[in-house]
Length: 389
Image (cartoon, rainbow, N blue to C red):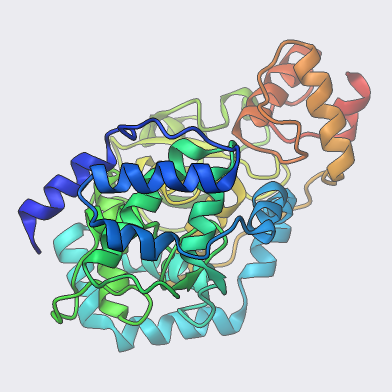
């Protein structure tokens, strides 16, 4: 797969823009600077001119980037909205239909078919819904915007290179954040880790199932996925468990958790493998052991609730029983969560943006305050905690 060219592209993507193109400002001036940078990177001027021709910032992209309200849902609500009997059946059917490709992914990259099926399902409903945003306009919009230019400016140059290679049409469509294809990968990841799975000489993640699945597997391997290791197992915890030990910040060998009374609902405990106790909705909801492979999934998506749901769905696709939902304390509303985040920030905790989303930083702060106030320190924010603060 053009190894010398790909090596050069990876090096280029890892290097900050040589011209340090500033974000924001007058769009025409910014576009000129980006085209100059593209030609300095070896893109033919006519290719750069064609790529940027007629573009303008897309307000729909900026709106989507600022909202992402779906991630304010709790794990139970989110997982129950994404996982259906039909989606489970279709996943298992596709596993059989594309068995040879999944076998290649497992043999060559060590990645379980369950994980690939889960992302295929959640990202595009198994390829059926790949997004209707014009990809180059979406990338340019986010590269010009000042929220994350360091992420999206290199993606513009990667899309330019893909266009030069004949693997990116100017009318390509995808997700609002510029991801392309059945498993929704950014242009830089496609260039660096895309796989020509069907042997046609091109990497086309929109139309080729083998290209999409093997590229996704190679990307997960790159981010540290370990062959033959689990990622998530449901467990039952004793009522006397020390809840302050839960969360991804505490990692112990699986057998040490077992010695504390942690029991698997099914399966075999992988002795010697480090794991964390995951309580997506606190001590009264589902409980899981999360292994190193689980952590690699955050390289695909940063949302805790999305990653946990995808990891759980992957276990279902591989034969696991439905989780025990339990009876968790009611979730805070979005406005209540924002008030909680403001109170936590005022106490000196770094919770990131005050956005009403229960992310990793907010969970850590919640657990610390629960412990300080003598509440069960399970990192699930309740109205009792909000009142106590």
